[in-house]
Amino acid sequence: MRVMDLPPKRASCARAALVGLALASAGFTREARAADDAGLSAKVPEDAPTGRIVRFGPRRPPRATHACSFAEPVCVWGHVGDEPLVLATLRSAERALAVLRGPLRMAPPDGSLDEGTFDLVLTDTNEVEAEVVLGDLDPRSPLDRASGYVVLSRRLRPGCALDVAVARAVTRGVLLRTAPGTDEGSAQAEAQAVAELVEPCAPIRASAAYTSFQEHPERALVSRTAFEVGHRFEALRDPPFDESREATQAIGTALFYRWLERGFAREPGSLLRGLFALRAAKTPPGAIRFVNEPDAFDVLGKSFRDKLFDGSTLDDLLVDFSLSRARFGAGEGGAAAALSGVPRARVDWDVPYPSAPRRLAPAYPVEPTGVSYVVVRTAGLREGARLRIEASWEEHARMRVAFVRLDAASNELGRARVAAPPMAHEAQMTIADLAGTDRLVVAVVALGDPSFHFDPDDVVHEPHGYALTIAPE
Image 1: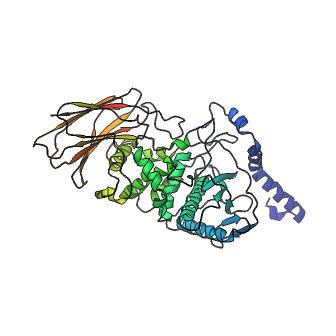
Image 2 (image 1 turned 45 degrees about the vertical axis):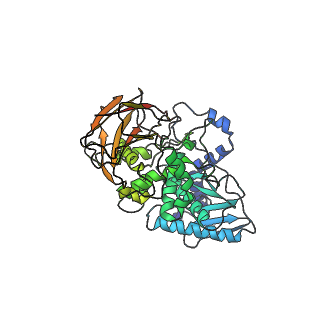
Image 3 (image 1 turned 90 degrees about the vertical axis):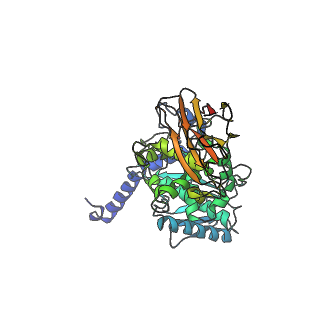
């Protein structure tokens, strides 16, 4: 029977009952917000999903003044005297949402169940620019779908800093709607990549993070900030104010997504939009942790299977990125010119063409999805000179060796992979064609454990070492 067919009093009661049933699960989860973190962690079962803990924040704090958009479902809340900053923040949010909904064709963040708007709250925090707070889970959705609000620092001033912080925060709101279980490292990197499509000045704000990313190529593409500390994940936080002092690896990983977008997306934002949409998951009711399967790397692995060449996998995509990453930097040409404002990647060794066999080891062990570089200078070699490379690495590690030949103008002359069986612990190759080559960049890429695919939710991304022998022939 339809509610509108009932008498007025009974219809009102029926509506209340329906609303109560729909929000029952949401009300139950709100009570869990008062649970002690240590007590909550102690209840995590061994077979719990491996995603972030389902930790709700407090309700949006009250503020004396606010402004809401007539064009987008967004409001900004602040203290008395914050009116200029409130209006500037609202303009930034409107612009970010307009770009997300328009050219990028992404779903906007869900509003709260209480008011239906996505809220940005100005606060006195001095630690970070912004923090996304998990508010509600949609009890009607067959897949995980959440909403929340954003806490913004009042120290932000109108201009690039505010615009980029708001764009990142709004993108995190989109992830709450589409994939709330996303690991923190991937979420920060993807938010920065989207922010760079929304705000042209966003790469400038991330320059310190990009420098950190390129200075530590041995680190995993999923930031250390996503690792678990004390049985809990870190808060949904943006980078600290002083990025030059404490730049996050997660923001720097946006270079990976920028490279994917420029090389494989049909239109700006389409690859990121697909990553957001295809990560939809379903967490069992009452679970302590979100399900984060499939994660971003699962989606990339499935999407790029056989796409680079017959039989290609996610491993080949990561190897290609590692070779291209070696060419990021001012003055580079070819495809890497699109990322010419990025610092050069640190190399472990930069050596001349050897006159006798030489054995090299990396400065740091290499984490899964990380890479170590060795540069061999080959300019002015006699005709017919060849280079022998032999690599070996630890057991319980999966690595791939590849190289790219560059001329004096940093133009790419060719790239190749050193073939090895899937479970091998060594690889060898003789490079015969060195004509016109100024330098050879050898990349040793770590791909994780041979028995398991890479998972960004792993608490420890175990690094491994290798040894590389170069010899003349």
